[in-house]
Image (tube, rainbow, N blue to C red; front, side, top):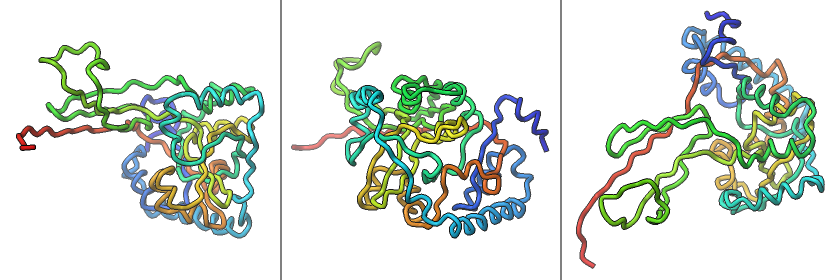
Length: 312
C-alpha cells in the first residue's frame, strides 16, 4: 500500500470524501476498484462491510431523525444582495438555463439540505475555503456562490479523425452543450474554401456552476449543484448560504430540472423518512476518506456528413 503521507504530497493524487450506506453499493465498489490508489488490491468484502455498517446507521437515523429534512430553513435574500441577484438574472446564460420552472433566490440552511452526490474532493473544498476567507461578508459569499466570471481549467482537444474529436479537462463540469447553427458573420480567423452557406458548431463547455437547489412540493430542498462550496462554507461555520431555488410541483418536473439519478429515484430524496443530508459529510460513521488517482472529464464528439440529391 502507498504511504498516506506520500500520497498527500504526490502530484496527481487527491483525497475524496465518500458517503457510505446509500445506493448504490455497486457504484461504490466500482469507484474504489477503478479510481482509488491500489483499489484493485482492496478486499471487496471489507469494503462491503464498511458500507453495510453505514447503511445500518442510516436505518437508526430513520428513527432518530425522521422528518428532519422537511423543516429546512429558507429565508429571503438580504436587501443588500438584491442588486447582485439582479445582475445574475440579467446574464443571458441565466435565462437559458432557468427558463422552465419557477425560480427564485434565497438563503438556505446547509445542514439539512438533501444530497444526491455521494462524494466531494478534499482539495477542492480547501481551495474554496481559502477563497472565501475565515469570515466572508454577505456580498463575498454571494459572489462565490453565484460566480459570473470564474476561471476554468484549460480544455485539451485531440483530433482522432477527420470527424472525431476528444476533449478533456480537470473540471468535472466539462460537458456537451448543443449543436448550434451559426452565420458566416459569427466566424472569425477562418479561411473558407468558398462562400459559406452555414456553419454548424458542436459546442462543448462548462456550466454556470451556481449554487442551486431544488425545492419540491413538500418543502424539502435538495442540493443540486455546488457541493464543494456547501461543504466548505459549513466547515467555516456558515449555516445558511445564498442560492438559486427551483421549485417542482410534480415529480415529473424533475426530469427537466434535476440530474437523471434524482429523477430515477425521487422517493429516496423526497419521500424517505431520513434521506442523506449535507451534514452527513461530517459524520465519521458514514463518511470514508479515499485516496484517488487523477481523474479527467472527457467528452467525445463525432459527426457524420452525407451528401445526396432529392427532388422537391
